[in-house]
Image 1 (cartoon, rainbow, N blue to C red):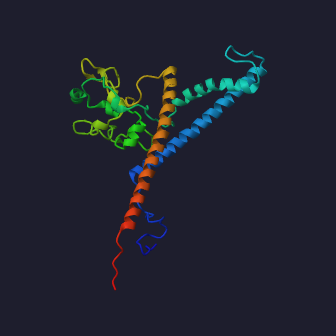
Image 2: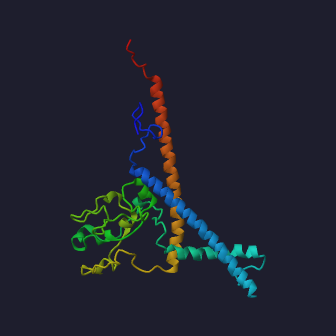
Image 3: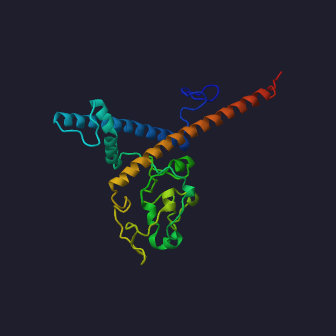
Length: 277
């Protein structure tokens, strides 16, 4: 296709070239929107599933002639289902929390207000070789908004790791130091390796644990109470993610409008172009 008189290829939209590269900011903005929408649809399905399960359980109870439990008020079928649905919904969300298909997002807390309680990492680096930088964890909306810490586009929003050695992409291969230390995520700031069997066989003796293909996974098996807390923290984090995306887009629109007004004002006040008579 040939360019028009302004040098814009045919098929382009406005003055934007149809083959113009997508910036990292544009890509991540689209991915974050898509991930948030996916989680919204998933939660809608889970809520619908909870109502169906509650309905089936109540119908089964009534057909079997089982009296209502102490927490269920006798009444219409609809009222009984509405009353039972919240507990069923929590059960389903707890079971779904362990799904590998979930979008993982960090807690909605300010990482710069986090206090560090761990050991002196600098002194330990020659021994442990920063093995904690091979562990998996999710970034927060704060990390995503800053745009400094990279995340895995295929597994949002896990910290991105190098495929060759499994280390965080921000870990320097020489010396194993952090190259984005000031912007490091909250888990890095509050992590204490001393009791983690994935890192140390014996911390007091400075004996490093044997390498394991499962060492990068979560340490202990979470209890049901842990999963309930995770579900609640996830709901807060996703709500904050929606707010963060909306705020950024509103700010981007405000800046674009201000720039357009400035360009229009400059164009109005510009002197007329010289003519060759």
